[in-house]
Image 1 (cartoon, one colour):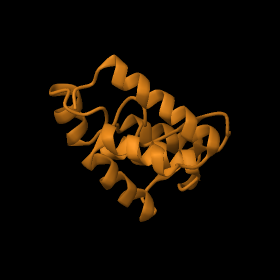
Image 2 (cartoon, one colour; image 1 turned 90 degrees about the vertical axis):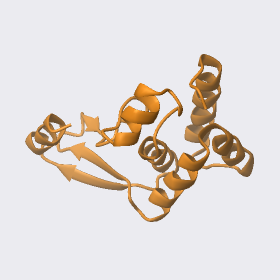
Image 3 (cartoon, rainbow, N blue to C red; image 1 turned 120 degrees about the vertical axis):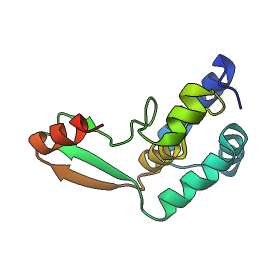
Image 4 (tube, rainbow, N blue to C red; image 1 turned 90 degrees about the horizontal axis):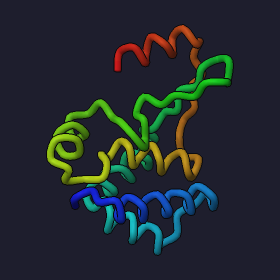
Length: 123
């Protein structure tokens, strides 16, 4: 699916609703599937298998994700399907990170600010 401003607006509104309710209804899941297709299916497997970690610096003032759910992922699919070909709205990792955060299904890992900076420097 090509990324259009209308499609992105629908996705943004839907994610806001999911974040507010902290759950995903069947109707919302259907819309997500329409928007993301196979990437949603792959993302739900990642979430179900506990594959999402939220890394938080010790100061608690900074929160960063290994995958930046709304903007960037370091996977091949992000650069090939999203950046290069504009065939998808986002990769399965971004969907998994957003979904896990919205419903509280992620593991939170606290690290020192120095370790967090080192992790981010490798992205």
